[in-house]
Image 1 (tube, rainbow, N blue to C red):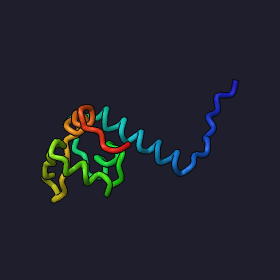
Image 2: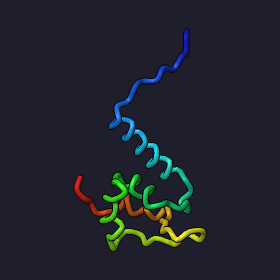
Image 3: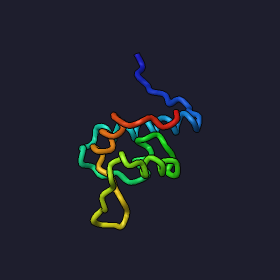
Image 4: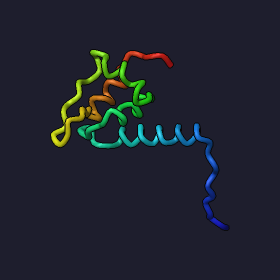
Length: 92
């Protein structure tokens, strides 16, 4: 029996969905204290970089912390995951 694995071609949409699912699952399994960038928060929330703005402005969303090595805001992964589990629903 030949156990070759052959790659299946993916459409751009399928590839994007796969990347998003991998990012989400990776964040779920990472340490709860891992720090997420805005881009990573957007992926975890299923939004675009620009589309996550409304979520970040939501008063119920966890506040960012300032990363020590840069001026960028970051969020604790565990806090974002907890918020996602209990969040109000936005659109679809």
